[in-house]
Image 1: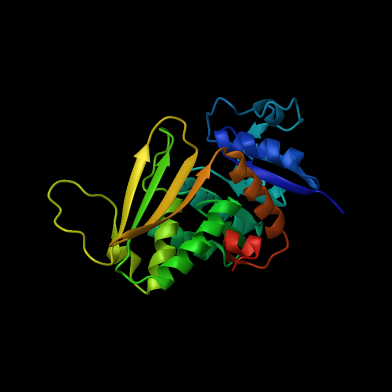
Image 2: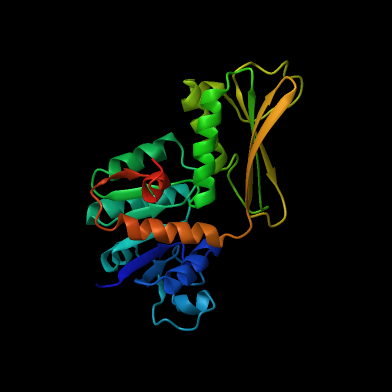
Length: 269
C-alpha cells in the first residue's frame, strides 16, 4: 500500500515544524511538501532541516495549488483568511484538508461549509483526543444540570496567541449551549469590565488569560449554591495537536465530501 503524502501549510511555524516531525515518524506517511507566505525567510529551505530532522529533500514553497497537486491530503495551521483560501483550493482540486486553524468568523465557517461540498474537510478548534473527550463530558454535564448551575469557561494560552477566547473555549461553550437548548450567540458573555450588574441566569461566561509559554489550559466550571464541578484539560506539549492532525489526515483520505470534526475521526459522534 502506498504511503500517504501529506502537505503542510504554514510549514515554518511552530505547529508546522511539529507536523513535519510527526508525519515522518508516523508509519505509512511522508511529507509531500510545505508552503509559507510569500517572502517568508523559510522558503527554499529543506523541511527536514526546519524540523531538526536532517534533510528530507523537500523544500518549502509558496504556491498552494502546487502543494495540493502533490499531496494526498493537506494539513492547515495558519490564519483564518489563509485557511479559507486553502479550503477553496482543496475543493477545486478535490483533495482532503485538515484545518486546525482557529479564530474563523461566521463568514469563514460558511466558506468552509461551501468548500466541503467539493471535498472532505476536517475542521476542529483542537485536535487532541483529551479535549474532544472533554467536549463530550461538558455536553453530558450541561444536559443533566439546570441553569441553577452557572457555566464559566476559563482558558489560558501562551503570550503569542492572537485570538481570544480560544477556539477550544468557544467549542466548549457551544457544546454546553446545545445541551441546554439555548442560543449560544445570545447567551455567551465574552468579557466583563466595570459595573456589570448581577450575573444573568443561564449565561455562559468566558475568561481568557495569556502569558508565558502555556500550551493550552481549559476549565469548564459548573457553579451552584454550595458546590462546584470543574472539568479541566491541560496540554503539556503541542505535539498532541500534531499527532491528532496527522491521525485526522490519514482518516480523511478517501472520505466523501463533507465537513467533519475530530469526533468523526475518533468515532466519538
